[in-house]
Length: 219
Ligand code: GAR
Image 1 (tube, helix red, strand yellow):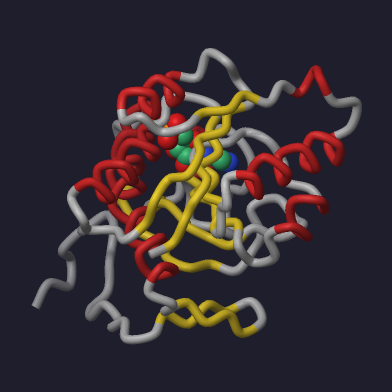
Image 2 (cartoon, helix red, strand yellow; image 1 turned 180 degrees about the vertical axis):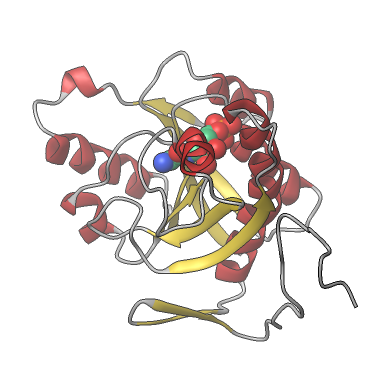
């Protein structure tokens, strides 16, 4: 069992997938608090529906990112949070948070890192012309979307995709792998070795992926 704090800024579909996985006992965790930098985030309403404590921390109230993060860490500690889960939290995490929760902050990103860090990455993936995209759950370090990778899921990029259709395809996988990553943490199965995260007891997928399937050399 792990006590988590979930940080949000927007719609909170990832938060919802975590709540659902906990309520259906697939994930052995408790959400101690949901914190938003955006008072209008729909994620706060989702938390309220499930009786989860909520806090809003406004950036306007803090002159620097470090001061904001010092307050964030303070509130998370008050709620006895062990693992911090960023679920669409649109702020860069700075030293006071990294020091308060060393290798205990995880993030989900809608691309196959290290390709396409940052913002609007589904649009960038389409414009670049990649044939696959996906999502990545990773530990947070001092960089942007750069920490050790825990789990990734791959989806094809289709010729007629828009940023919207690709985002939806990726989100479905986010909702699957983020709860899994939390459960792996809760079971103590994540071993960090430098940049590599070894998942104890996991198996590797067989076969290869190819997109498009031109079937020229089909056997
Ligand atoms: C998700 O796609 C998440 O991967 C992304 O924001 C969306 C939040 O959706 N996060 C980032 O881009 C962080 N760099 P949600 O509020 O419905 O969970």
